[in-house]
Structure formats: structure tokens, C-alpha cells
Amino acid sequence: MSIRSTRYKVALYTPISSEHPPEGHSLTDVQSDNTVFAFNIMFERNNPESEWRLVTPLKFIE
Image (cartoon, rainbow, N blue to C red):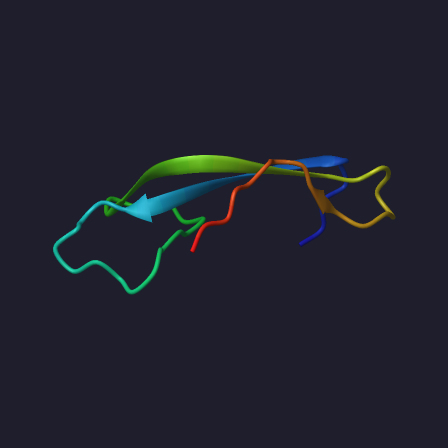
């Protein structure tokens, strides 16, 4: 994917149904009738040639 800007936001969604919970956690970037919005994550870079870095603070749990 070619993104010319220096910031990029991705919306993540989680499944609505809890009848058959997947093993672990499940997120997708595809919005559908079976998903609900979970949160956004933001990436940025200094210029179009530099590497992307995650700027949204995330807390990982086990």
C-alpha cells in the first residue's frame, strides 16, 4: 500500500458474537455486520521515505 502522508490511522474491530469465542483475542481491520468498533491505532513517520512507527500507546497483557 502506498501512503504519501506522514500519519495513518487504522480502525480495529472485534467480533460481536460471544457464542463461540475464538482462542485468544481477535481483532480485524474489516468492518462488517458481525463486528463492532474496538479502537484506533495511529502510525506516523517523519517524511514519505522514512519508516513507520506506532504512536498509539498500547498495553500488552497475557
